[in-house]
Image 1 (tube, rainbow, N blue to C red):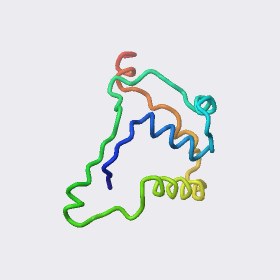
Image 2: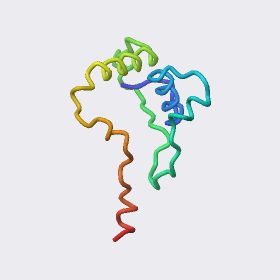
Image 3: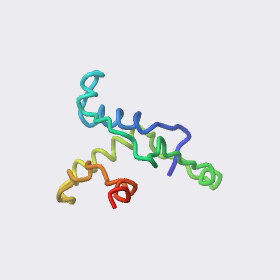
Length: 102
């Protein structure tokens, strides 16, 4: 739903790599990260505000750390449901680059 803390996209990437690959050193981290040029419309963050839900009485049942761990575990156990899931890591073509080619 949302949270009151915020992570940048790069912070999220680092956290996911640590959790999925059990990496602790910065040099190992860089082995799993590809830095590419930003898209012209690249988002640096994806803030989610849950204040309205909280006013209605909603409260998170688990911490972010526990929730992301559960999400990783669920996808690990259910990866067989997505054939060719490795393609999800391929960058999407930029609409701007496609228009420039025309």
